[in-house]
Image (cartoon, rainbow, N blue to C red):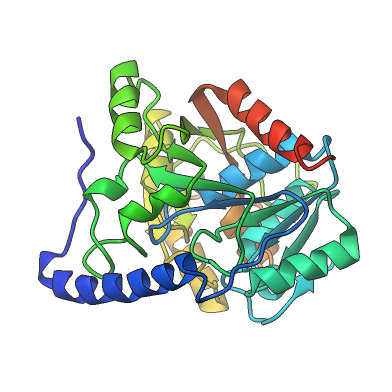
Length: 349
């Protein structure tokens, strides 16, 4: 069954205007009237053409896991949600206010990988090359950043919100025309159901491809073992009801996963990249206490990176647990890894 989502048809005229503007910009880059920079090392971009919800960070981490022991790797992100501007290189003192929640999450998972943030990806790549001399750079969410020409462009498409059925902002979530998927070398359909049939894969592959050379893969979210947010804590996971606190674009699958495990779940959702305040923490604590003494909080690693910036009371902190989110390819994972490594090797690693 095709997943359904809402389009605000009354806003389509605004979407046409937005689409025309992005179309003009793309055409100027295509004609070289606006300049794009390429580099002498592999620059692997992982992005989308929709406003959030495709799983960029888990897929960025997946590619980083492939390359971290294969070559010297750096990750460059814009750093959404940070309080700073310009270029910053992460270190052990970095917090989400300085570099953003997603870069901080990546740095904590891969401490040996250089992670930097910069709005201007061309400037950022040059700074990273000068400081770290990487053999490959992974760009997090730069599909629309046409000032850089990636050597490998990976486009993510949410199974639950097919770009071919979507509409331009603000009627839908497209940031540019679905036809612009032609810039992708690889398309990954993300957040797929575990039992997605071969027939459905073949049908979507045929629909999404704009060129026979494009590779199409299918991935699903994979959840790890829930662990205490407080570092070094040995707190056991409670058996009571869970208050799921998230500031991500698409929390539905987390809710479905936890309820599928037989847990009683209450959602407390915030906008993507939301900056939690002390008042929010008080509301979370009040909601949790109202659910009972055996209730506990489950959040994502991305949210935990932001929550860690606040001085949370020790009693509440003991009741906050993190659900790690990763990805698994439904098929062709080994082929994807070979493509990534072969691409890096083509630059003479």
